[in-house]
Amino acid sequence: MRVVLGVSGGIAAYKAVLLLRLFKEAGHHVRVMPTDAALKFVGAPTWEALSGEPVTTSVFQDVDSVAHVDLGKSAQLLVIAPATADIIARIAAGRADDLLTASILTATCPVVVAPAMHTEMWHNPAIQANIATLKSRGFIVIPPASGRLTGKDTGLGRLPEPEDIFAQAMAAASPVQDLAGKRVIISAGGTQEPLDPVRFLGNRSSGLQGVCLASEAKGRGAHVTLVAANITVPIPDGLDVVQAPSALEMQRAIEGLAGEADIIIMAAAVADFRPQAQVEGKIKKTANEDTMTLTLVKNPDILAGLVAARTNSSQVIVGFAAETGDQDGDVLFHGRAKAIRKAANLLVVNEVGPNIGFGQPTNSVTFVGKDGEVLGTAQGSKREIAREILSRALQLG
Ligand code: C5P
Image 1 (cartoon, rainbow, N blue to C red):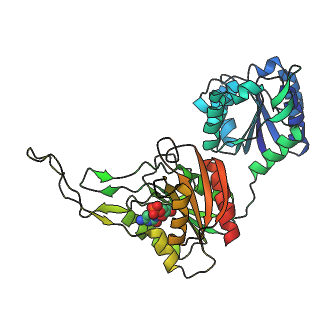
Image 2 (image 1 turned 90 degrees about the horizontal axis):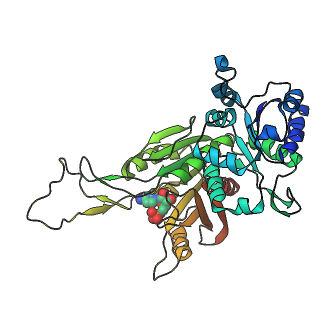
Image 3 (image 1 turned 90 degrees about the vertical axis):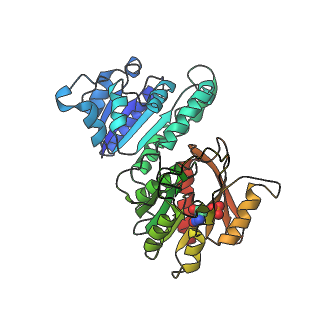
């Protein structure tokens, strides 16, 4: 396997030497990419001697081979250990000011980040926000360990042992193929219900949770079809994508595919109502009317329809319930009632509101079974939540 080992400038850089050895002894081809600061801790001759490869920090060397694009693109695993506060910020911002950050931007392989810094730095909201950004983009972050730090102090922030990083990085490079051979349909995004040629009724769903589900399922070997309603986040390559911008289009697309599916996950926010008629020309503002009335009609409940029409008893159907609490009950109260109503195998209940749920990189969910029973909870990046949903769906099949 072609591995790029990024090393940034922290005292734990010495442990990356041992990590390099582990990769080499396991037979991998390793290209070490230190930052300039890393070379103050461990010099280039050490990296070159142990990797058998040249070492540079600059995008201005090997320009004829376009190294700043090529090395990242051809890597099958990219590991950054230790990852300092500074490199984490540069990666989160999408900087390309040295060979390592430029390579990270072109990498399509799993990227594993092992942060190491002082406890106070690790807890700083700026760092935590950057870590959340990295996780939401699919980077695998190995949490720092607790223990002796650089000085006499101890605490959270220590680089995990090279053997641990090696094991986790290798697992990331070849995720378990527990969905191999399964056909998975995932709806994602928010439907737009046309009002006239230029206007629609819509919602704030970005599609991120559904996209994370799709890319995780693909990584675990599934054949994935993403039924996409106005997704505003990037969609990874290699997925079958069917565009379904409105509820009726989504119903048509999903019902056409459902017969073959082993798992269907309805992560899309589908409008419950649509304008009764789509007006042909743009609706005009008239001088003598201060209000306007729209007549809406109910959309089909795609999820409930799939459950009712299911003929294959091992097919697993998962729904979402984006809820807010009200005077009748809290989010879970409404979620459990919905689980019973919809009778999907699993309902993923989450709270939505300003800065919660829609459009956010993280999520906090409760899993509810078809009889309204609470099966568990999960918090974390939408990618972590996606992994948990897929594992639960697999168990239910
Ligand atoms: O009823 P509610 O919209 O809250 O239900 C949410 C779940 O039902 C989601 O999984 C959503 O994708 C699905 N749904 C649907 N068809 C609708 C409305 C929602 O499939 N018309």
